[in-house]
Image (cartoon, rainbow, N blue to C red):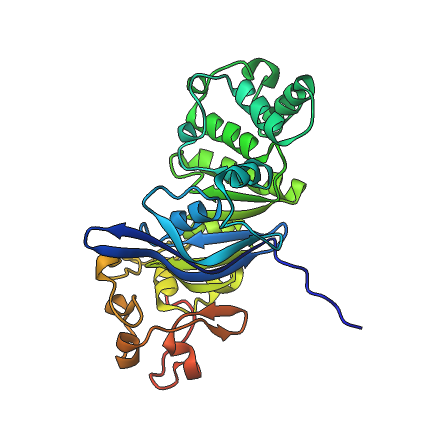
Length: 338
């Protein structure tokens, strides 16, 4: 009996994003591929400038000009969406894909009440009366932990604290029960204690409603607490992807190992954390071969000449030549060397 593997909810294949400039074309996202299954949380992590946010913006059709998709395709539930007209993509955004951004004020219109904005979103994408939409909006405000939701629905964004505004944005993203949410640095602007509350809330809501999440962040700790799988980005490419527990315990790519080594561990008495020397290259100065090789303590000649493709190793994939033959040539031990 033949069993058919279910289609991934989101499939990104060979996606490239470029920016034309007077000095030539800059490639900000360079041929990346990944998928997200139904109900799964995929964490996307990397330094600022790695291309994480641009990837999210490309998926939901919100690239700022002159940025453009120059290659690859994006499929949602088996249907290609990266080539849709703006009007069709606008209907998918909100109904099929919700979005949560770093600064809630960019998602909320200051001149309308919270309730008005929720009701407008619900009526745009769902077939119901205004009264039903109002009740649904109040219900979602209650679900995200806004006290006195009936009264607070008539308040304006400036009347909420940063943490409460982010809860409203989560309600706005989930009120039409989309199958996928793109969450781009949803906790960065918040206090640490509020960050934890927002992450716990997002995990619970998505679990309860079966929503998949693409969680974009530069914080590996947030990924470790939240995600099922993690994709590590560096200089516009994915350098490692795998189950989050496996990647945290036994990172395969030297860059991921550096990220993990920079996280302090409870009960570990060390004077200095691991440091990745140097900085990420500018888009107009990306070196040949593996773009991480100038900062890599294990780089050898092939790394400087040939760009590695993803290589499978157990449950991980990593773009590193050291994976060929498990790096026996150099006697390197794999796993975290924090």
